[in-house]
Length: 268
Image (tube, one colour):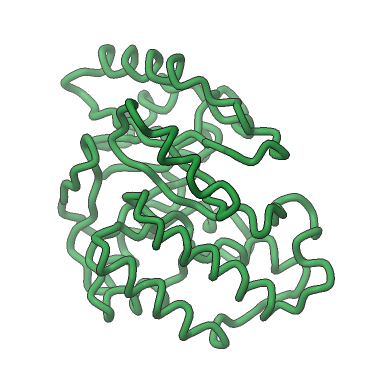
């Protein structure tokens, strides 16, 4: 197995000893073939994480851990980018001259408003309006053509449930179909982000119905990621995600080396 969504001390929201070597040791002990580090990259100057990532230091640390575990564990170099339409040109400029194995596109802001800080994003909005605007930004992320992987497709629900309670995505079926079709056509991978299994609702981002819809629309490429911000979270929900993918009709998942997709079989 491969866990491609791991945050280390190079992300400002990591905690509890999130060192690369600690993750590598855990991966070996759990029988993983490879792991991918994907620390946060922010461009909004109002965000505390903007400017936090030091690319050269990040690269040196990955090179060191690769050398230590060479022949025992594949170490991949990724990045998770908060895509915002207001800063849509910034990622391309940043990527120039830098080497990554894969680029993850994620939505954490809508109209420069973070929805992971309290209820500010939801204030004055109906649930339908909040999700519609969110999915519009997800669609822009896919349309940008910048990324290899679309992260945690519907994770707005993590923050919306305390505000609205349980909410069905049925009103957004058309938007969701359009986004998933675009992902499938583009050759991007859809991430099965397992961090949702650490929350009360106990399901992945996206949930199983969305994965099934992606497959129905021709999508075949998925990645698995625990979205760990501490070693204790590493691999959480990955076995459940494997089962989900297989139930949806998928027999393999993917990872990336130098932006080139590689497939591997997933077994129950």
